[in-house]
Length: 230
Figure 1 (cartoon, rainbow, N blue to C red):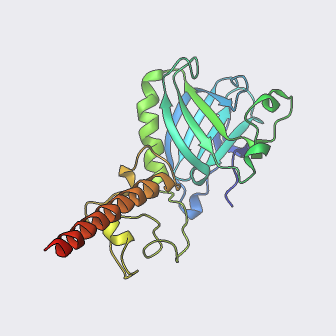
Figure 2 (cartoon, rainbow, N blue to C red):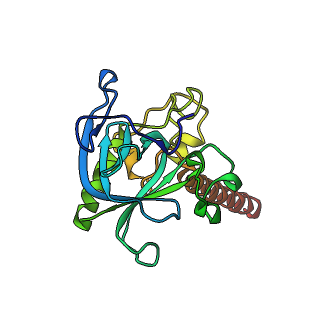
């Protein structure tokens, strides 16, 4: 299982330094955004640092403390969004939900986050607050692009040919024959931007299927009644 939020202190270079990436295995730096504060769960914002977005993960490094930094893989980000609602958070930010692999009751998402020590493996959300709010849309777009580079692994026996998307009611109700996705189909057109959990889309399609089957049953019943009357 991909780890959630974790400490990251692997830097190189002088001054605040830059994160060490796994270049040998194809990891690339996609974007650098200075002047970003990080908010872990419901704790107070950390001092301003620099945000590094690579093709595999998000890294935040403190500008004043080389021993302070955090990282999370895109595979562990279940959702990301732009938040501009002051009722949700005082400053415009990128909001992200993190998969932890622990029970919801054990995650740090309430009062336990106010403790001096925080178990990062249980943190389920974070906020990235740029000093320039005008950069939010750019950051969101880069998040989306990098998330698409890191699709959630799917077992080969799930869905169609290893893909757990349901394309249409006819395909879902079919006899299990191999079916290819239509040309117009794109996983990025789902409701919201989430990486991996498509239960909502599946539920909507299942409801559509059930509705269609109900309509078919009513039509057959009317035909039977007409046959008896004639």
